[in-house]
Image 1: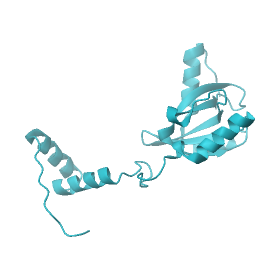
Image 2: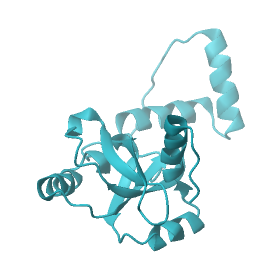
Image 3: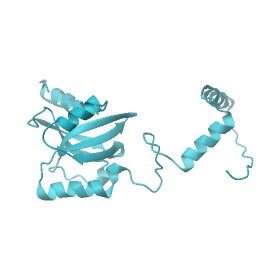
Image 4: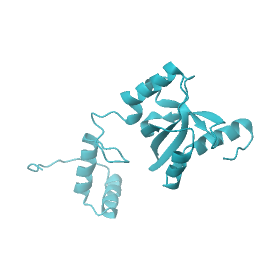
Length: 176
């Protein structure tokens, strides 16, 4: 770090007390907390992996994912995919296929996806996955083995969201 200089800021007394309390609870001085917050503001990092975000596209908005989606729409493919996300600090996995019937673009901010509701990929529910939470994807087989492995490894079951939507929409339950 370079030579230090003084920064003077004026804040409300009550807010200063909250900042001091938060800093103390986290083992920091108020100055260190302010420096840390300013560094994060100037050079933000991904909350889940710590990688710098400036100058980098989030995976859900990347050209690579756009190309995969475009190929599926062009060829009307039904290739199953695993979509990996980081939602509310937890890693989640979705198993299904891109929704080729939905022509939404990258600017929509959500990935149209058909989640499989059972282990045989026979029943499905269309959902939208927010692109900002997508951390990765991979093609997979119609067999649920890789999906199940990821669930056993501790990933949250993203398809449960689709099952809940299905249950609410139809009034019926569907067992996996």
